[in-house]
Image (cartoon, rainbow, N blue to C red; front, side, top):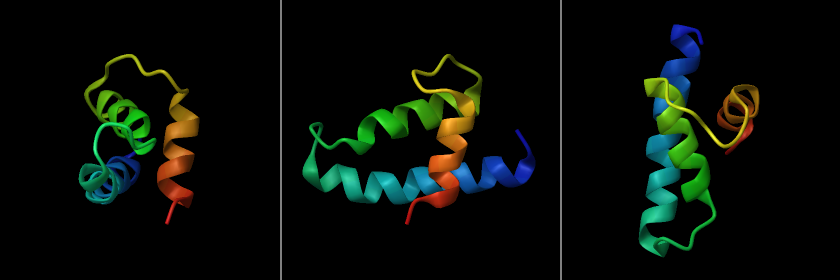
Length: 60
């Protein structure tokens, strides 16, 4: 993962949390958030790395 991808992923995690936290644990973004956080620290993820990075790149 490039430095730019890491930075983008960190930013998207903040944005996704801002959406998911007010709704609570049932919000669908939590799975994405947990996968993205795991990817940043080198842990196993449910989704493939490329899918997580694509979501960060193309989500609004």
